[in-house]
Length: 93
Picture 1: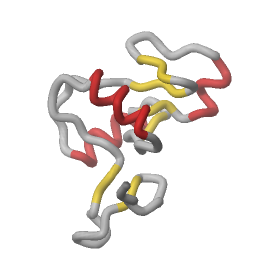
Picture 2: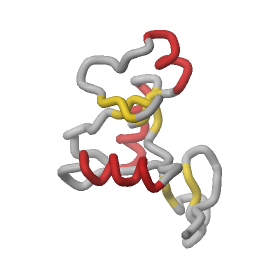
Picture 3: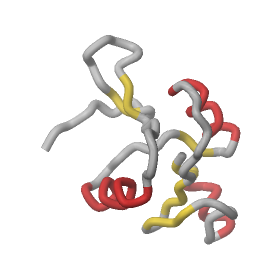
């Protein structure tokens, strides 16, 4: 999960159990759930599945993920057309 920005600005720190990278908070859950179930868990914490915006963020995630983990990328609306939970399309490069 990546904590929604408004919540972070209110407290200036991450909640207990979350990790900060730059100006965002991340929760690395150990629960085994479906993509939808994991997204709902994030939403229940005022967060969402992570949208990877940079190589540096990808490195941070790679260094902290220890098991299979869901991210905010899916093709559930249209098979083969990948987009992030914020509706931006997947770009390569």
